[in-house]
Length: 204
Image 1 (cartoon, rainbow, N blue to C red):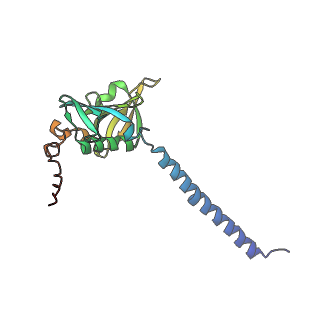
Image 2: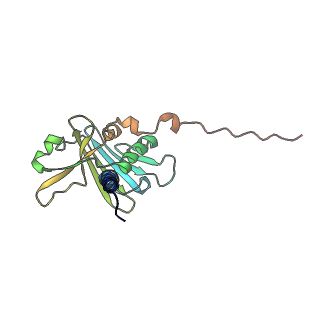
């Protein structure tokens, strides 16, 4: 049976519209998902995998180690003093490290690191895992709109002599640029009185 010309045109238009929707909606969504997948986490370890942290800023060099004897506190300051660590402060930094995402990657010659504040970084974080693996995150200055920090992860030089830089959350600056007193467990927790136990009554 021969279809009327008008019907044939309508069928072709419907097919054309269906193809347009497929390529622009379905394929577009797939491509967008691919872009989001490229925004991957920087590190693959978990917070429980971390055995020790060394945080070096322009003011202090701090060494923290997981407390193997107790969960209270979970972290101990080993230097420049020996003291219980402030678990919420350390956990905040760990959470940033575990969830850190690479928002962009750029390649630059090693002699241009000063332009990104990485020749004299605001902080260097050395991470040692329980399996003896080590990682390093070096934090430079903010980008032009202060939305991210320039950073190096496990620094190394490419075959072309350039160095890869990442853009990471500015929250890292807040997490590490602290006074030594903030890294210590608060005195009111250390000296908190134990809960009094009820006195047993004596029967008469």
